[in-house]
Length: 386
Image 1: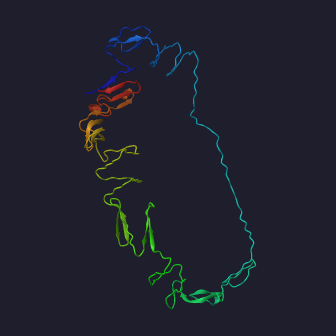
Image 2: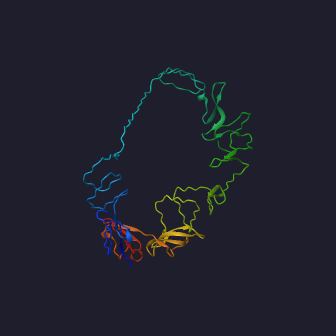
Image 3: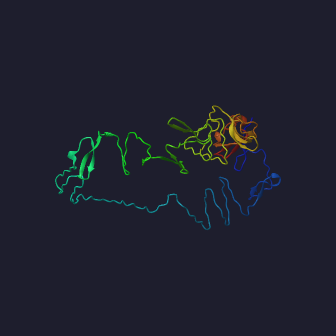
């Protein structure tokens, strides 16, 4: 059974069964890698970094040096003091601008001069002096007949009753309304039927102008002699017509020849989604694989390196409860096969929180947690599960 074993590094507290030391000189630094892998001593003379462990005392150096100092310093320093500059994080202040409120007002002059009021044609003559009330009378109004259409008599300079009757909604006469003369015309809107071929009518729409939504192209349809056809495109748009209804829809299989932008959610309910693209950009922070699974299952990604969709895979193996690597895994696989390598993880915390040998690491546990490490944040010790 695997156990946690301490990794000996600089600064570790270790109990060694055998340490062979020879040729050491008092007052010199101990350097590893001497003869026969023994420790030797040497004097420091040159450039490099001097590192003292926590709690070291009595360190001294004479002469000049350059570099940086880390740690808590006490004692006297002789020589020229260095200068330093700093920038505070309190922000940059500057003058503030001021906004001026622009206001405006205006007055309406309610007084106005009143000129002479002159009555034109169609009104009885009269005058107005600017005070009192004035009554306007339509010329010939007294002789007009109710529910009859009036017309202007230029000879008598007044309105007179015509031969057409009006009950408020329908204009009718003793016979059909006929327009004669080269300049005869009717304006406005009317209801009813028209008898004739309409060759002399003007102002009626006889042509329908059509254009695409992109503004390109366009054409016209001659009303009464041409048919407007609405035609779809293969694998893109389908059209159908019934009675007075034209239906535009998508066919069973749709092909988009250019870019497609979906502002809402894209839901694909098929079995296979194929994306043929050079680079796939996914804005989501997390990608959910094996969606719908209710228990532990294998899953991951495969980078194709051979034919038939086979390549290098990285993912989670539920049998070993670890992240793993496998060569030559098919992209259609549902589980990992023979694992090529395991991804090691590092946990950390105070020494007392290190998992027991029986528990093992978080990934792989006691049975398959080989190679995972634990780092103690209070003592600096490193442990490996092996």
